[in-house]
Image (spheres, rainbow, N blue to C red):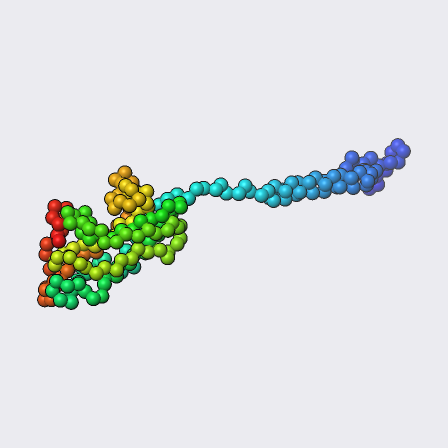
Length: 216
């Protein structure tokens, strides 16, 4: 079968198949597209390089002292038995107490006080010391006591360490805590002492002091 054209002999074509599209126009469109992509990439990179504002400075907050009772010496989990060399005399070797302390002090020093029979009628301060202010990550601070019992009756007694910031005491030289601050700032640890018990009965604790009895 033959197909014969009519008219001027030109075969009609669709718009998509026309061969007279300008190549330079296509090249221009491609260049414009690449420029647009480059601009978007630059904007994304610029946004990712924005430097964040520095963190806001905060004033250190003071915290209650933490007493490391786990490593305290002597241990607080057993009764401390103290034997004088002779009846009525004091031991030749003092009993050494030591407790490590951590706290955030915000520039304020700590006071550490050891008491005999703290909170009883026979309460007596054994020693007091000032501990320089520091930060919580300082684990090298401690409160110590070299105790040679003097004028202490036989039987049950308590040795107590009280630690708080200086402003938590009523005055700079006072041994009494300010009740308005003690609940939030003071920390304490207590050892039970059996003074000169019978050698065959060291587990008995007679005459333990209370808030209504001196115990000395």
